[in-house]
Length: 463
Image 1 (cartoon, rainbow, N blue to C red):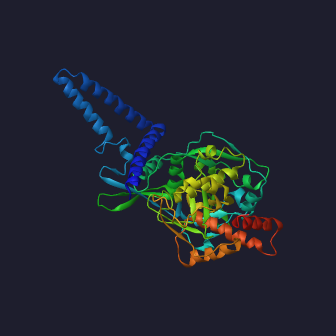
Image 2: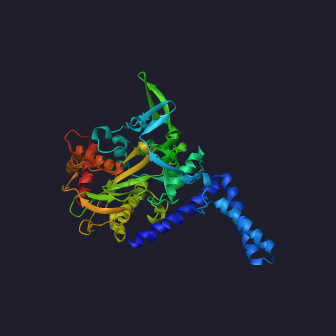
Image 3: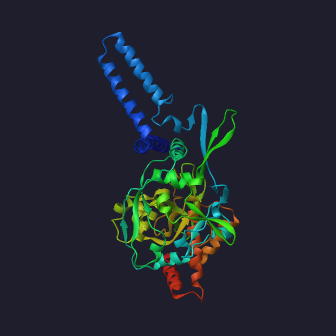
């Protein structure tokens, strides 16, 4: 790890702990009381040190220092003691689960059905047939086609406050994640998609966005697919709490079988910030393979096929406050491509060469909405420079298959499957969308499908 990356990680740790302190101060009344007590004691201690005149002042200062020590603990941290990764000599850790604890049931996340309105739009899980990823999506070709064919896609912002805290265990989960120095986390401002997919499919609808904070997503989207473990007195690991019980689903019966389906009010149960992923076609007309390092908050040690991350609130201003949501999403995709390849000086060209192609919901992350797209290299030498940022991305390769049109993407998918490459779900779904578009070149395709095929074909060829 280079000195610059070490310095960046140190900054992230400090920023993350400060943001966590403010977060706890906002939501935890007991913590506000403890923190104010500590601050007032500090003030008294400083006054006693500056103005002491007798031995009694020294004794009083020592008592105040003892109070501060008890409040902050042996590691002198502002994190509440019962949220710390090690409390009372007992270590706490978290681990992802691929099952949902629903009352007495344990249901695989891959079997969760779409919310009623999205079920009517044809959302389904295609990954069961692909079998290249442990996680699962819900996607609809009908919605993806509407997304690409809409003449305009206006958006509005609604910042009605929503409280996503259902349990103090969510706060414990955040503390454990933030204090884990392998994955640095700060409370950045993001954009959430505050609509169901029918807002995308309806050409007359305005989509609704909401300012979101990463910690809100962390304590819902990430926490609700996790379990917290702790060590017992026999030095064994045991389940402390299973946060998947808060997954935003309802139980329903279908053909005498029990299923879980996303709740109609899922948008109020989890903070669903917008994910964005774009496949990167290098100057060699090949799909990039970007190997993720351990500092990636989501997708560590997996392979991305381009840029992947979240749509940040600041992207609105960076993109020039576009009236069409797809332009905003394309800007964010270009930014992620340039950040992860260390090519930020080429963001304008990347933006001009990015197209939004589809949408899916990430089942394992409480139905997180993700928009996918395609970025063409143009004149940027990604492959020539083996472009990586050296932080989140640690290695660059290419899929050894030339992509001259949509019809070549199925071969890329076959290469990924045949070689067992551990691709992130978002990249897999971006590639899956391109294989669907490849099928739109068939003779029996509809006029709308042929239009999409021709548009993507022309885009790949730079026309």
